[in-house]
Image (cartoon, rainbow, N blue to C red; front, side, top):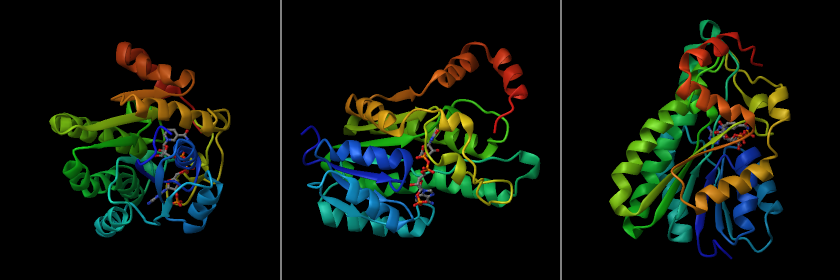
Length: 263
Ligand SMILES: NC(=O)c1ccc[n+]([C@@H]2O[C@H](COP(=O)([O-])OP(=O)(O)OC[C@H]3O[C@@H](n4cnc5c(N)ncnc54)[C@H](OP(=O)(O)O)[C@@H]3O)[C@@H](O)[C@H]2O)c1
């Protein structure tokens, strides 16, 4: 078993990408810590993992920053070490800047960016002590570009790249790896849970998401990148070409972006 005796902590493990990463790691013998706010859903994911899997369900809100160090203490006391931390918890957005309450911008930055920062800073001392560890971040294609009605979401994902690229450089000599994964469209509840202008959930599945990559297939591809300790990968369908379009033909990308009618 490739990950036997490895402890993998997944945030946002109660659904979608996090849930399927849990199954993929469980199938390879990893010990798991499953976190998100909804304990009942975390227990469901636990029940669906390979039965022999050693799993700690640790409910938490990654944006409740003061509670994070205590959760990390609990996890380290339980398993003795954390080998891989996967910062996956996140919320998307469906609202134009002019309509969006500042509280919504703040919440998206707190969950998607500062939550990952708080988790990583709290886990880092244990990894540094063992001179072993890998921090994985689930960013997005939106971490590389901006489109209408995604301002705070795109900002939170761009911020992850700056922070975690710096961390990777700092930790090179310590043997701690940083892997940033940028998904395109993956078939999950992300657009149903996305926040609208007043902070209420969107409650609608976007067509592009429904037609996106199966989350199980996504998880296998992500695992492949994690095993190879890739610094950064894009995983998705043809939408990931937008990243290259923006990089090599920025004016053309800009003209396309302003016409996008994204749901
Ligand atoms: N699906 C896509 O097309 C796509 C594309 C690009 C990037 N992504 C990224 O992939 C990640 C996973 O999203 P998904 O597609 O799997 O969507 P999802 O099904 O909505 O899952 C989001 C997860 O994040 C958790 N979460 C949300 N707020 C949290 C908080 N404050 N504290 C702890 N956990 C929290 C949710 O659990 P609780 O509600 O139980 O807390 C849930 O487990 C996100 O970072 C998202 O931005 C997804």
